[in-house]
Image (cartoon, rainbow, N blue to C red; front, side, top):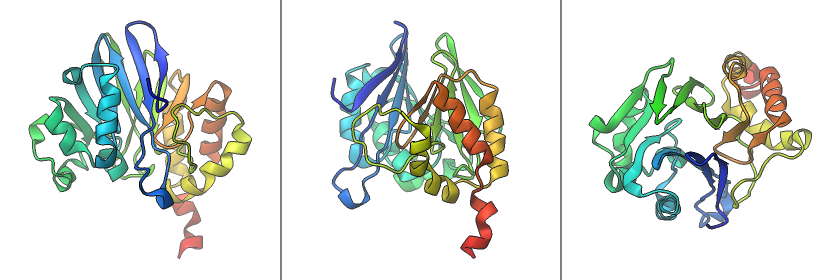
Length: 252
């Protein structure tokens, strides 16, 4: 296996893999980006596969873990190009169903995707999807930062795949960097969350949902994962964060 993939969980039948593939040709705008794969009994569920630029690398890396024809679902937490721009390539190369907020279905044609019969459209409250013997829960994360946005909770591994929530602005091309010192890590979280998250009220709504779950790890789309005590420290920090419309006087 290459140094851009890391197994986060494996009990023999259920596995979660983290990848870190970036468009490194644009060095001035380099940002660590994570993609995730859940596998149960050989069937695959891909999370936020990213841009066209990383498609070939990610395809090959996934092929080291499962047969591509066994990729059953591809989930887009929101509509950004670093999340969803490769949808047309995945549509051609797989028979997977595509899961996304109902707000973004109409925008996928701008990425060259037209087969709407393959889309599972999520209404605002989210759903629970049975995947093998286990449940995947789509947790509302609207306005954090997209108007239609979801996190995904894997009930078997107890990993919360949080999308841009918990994202850190730093460069780390190798997979699986975990937060060691939350107090030090906050500097990499603050600017992004203040600008991209809607408001403290919205942060609190999401944290309340998260606190009702048994979470062992929070795995964001950018930056490092949160484990053990850092899960609670991050949730407590986000619950008190002033951001977005709370700071409107500074922006206008």
